[in-house]
Length: 373
Image (cartoon, rainbow, N blue to C red; front, top):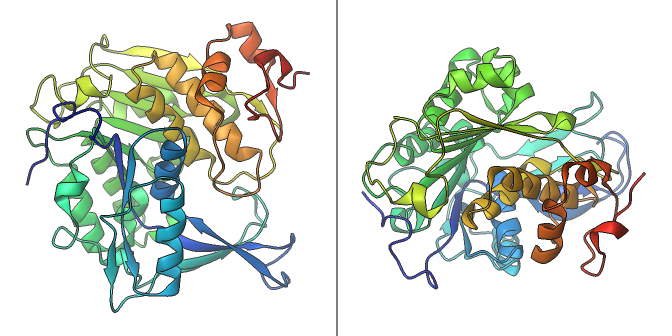
């Protein structure tokens, strides 16, 4: 199994990012409160990898989502909605037996004790993904392949698939991996957390939250996280309101032996070892704290594809996250590219004074018109 080296195909036809994972129909509450008390729900979609694909497509990139859904109405809704963002869904497979996963959640922040999520995904079509039933030719056709630890938790077959896709091989696209530790999906405790560490070390670009690294691996601090992940060329440590720390450098790891291929095409080659970049977060008037991590990854990947400096990659991640944080759902239209570029280019003082609230992504708002304290 092999795919074309990134950058070798016609730039006008090559997919920029291929995202693999489960997407589900999500039911959003009509009002705050316990699930037992909410009288009605609105229908949306949710899925870390499809969220990234939708955000990238909305930002003007050629994005594809590869997944598996049931041959049911919910599957129809997922595929049609994701495609409406401009995402290529031609490689999505339909399962004639297993259903599309769904879930219900409360309106409160995921990090609070009152947040509830009720998943109905056991035995879903996506959990049946394996090395034997996914279209490898589509998965490996892009400049970047984006994966997450959520998929690894769905089943033994899904874990086998991720291990296969992260294996070193000539011509492998740049592999991006969001750890996305979800303890409720795992059943084996420390053994399962170690699987996420194993997978992350096999990838080229890794996103990991400082809090989830401590929860999953007992590792505290950005430097310690980098020490535990020495192989990836780029490690992005998300530090919540403190911002993000990026470790970037060419490392001798179990990646593709295709020098000048995926890494160069996606703009990660050429760093000196152990370059460390710290980028403060933005102040945001949060409407709903869901989908921000996926949006951050999309913003960072978008800027990576464009070959922007590391600082600007992180800033674009923060800006894309701020767009989602200031709306109720998991997805929204990102700011126009020139608008985001103007904000990302601000000097450190001006960046630090920004405070973004609902409506800030309007294309006709200049940087000085964005809300400041």
